[in-house]
Image (tube, rainbow, N blue to C red; front, side):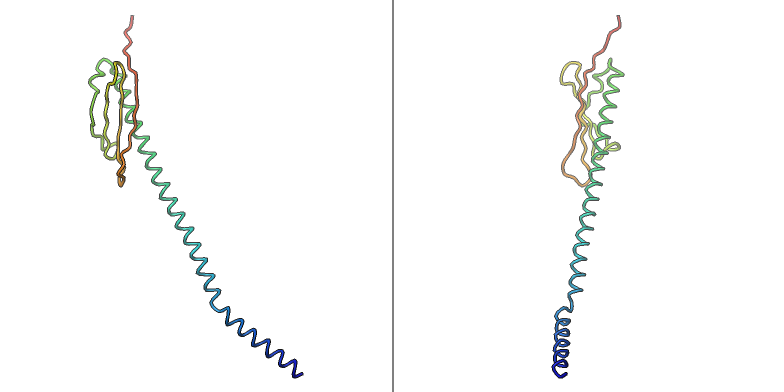
Length: 140
C-alpha cells in the first residue's frame, strides 16, 4: 500500500506542477483572440471608408456629366447662337466642389465641354470632357 500511496502522491504533485505551468495560457489565448477580432473590425472600417469615398466620386462624375450634357443641350437648342455659349473656366461651385466649366470650339460645328472639379480633401482635380457636333439644318 505504501507503493500505491507514493504513486498517488507523486501523480498529485505532477498534476499540481502541470497546472502551475499552464497558468495564464487562457489569458494569452483571450488576448490573441481580441487582437485578431480587432484587426477584422479595423479592416471593415477601412473598407467602409473606401466605399464612402468611391460613392462620393461616382456622384461627382455623374453630376459633371449632367452639367456637360445640359450645356450641350442648350447649344443644340439654340444653334443659331452657339458661339455665345463659349466660355473659359466658368465657376460652378453650387453644382460641384471647386467646379469649373469650359466650352470650346476646336473645329467648325464641333463643341467641347470640359467640366473640372476637386473633391474636398483631395489634391487631384478630376474632369469630364464631352464632344458634340452641332450642325444647323436649314429647312428647304
